[in-house]
Length: 106
Image (tube, rainbow, N blue to C red; front, side, top):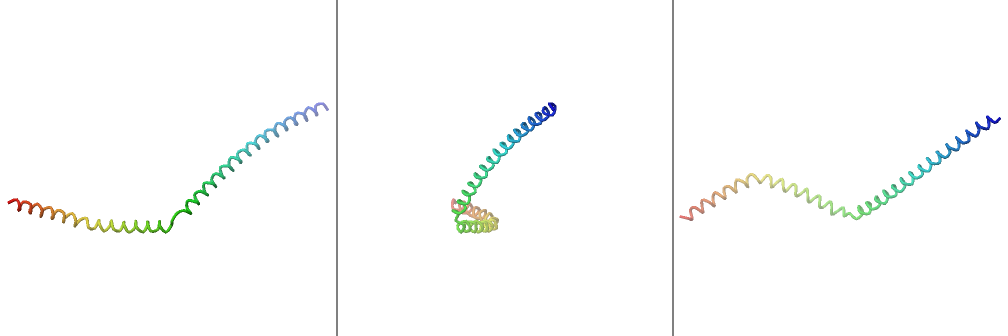
């Protein structure tokens, strides 16, 4: 019988050691869950702030600004088309001004 008691005592000590290890793991898991919960709450707070900022946006004004940008893009395209003739007109105007200037000097 004493051998059986020794075996039981060893099993009991081993079980106690395992229970203690499991309790430590459980405490670590609870701490991790608490940290994740805190981070999730921070994320929800940030999302709430973002939603508040989005609600402050003036969507019709943004659409008008986008339309104005598209119109300006079309205007720049037209100015690009007028660039080549404008270069030649500038050269001809400079030539005419220089000829006129030379003629007036005489």
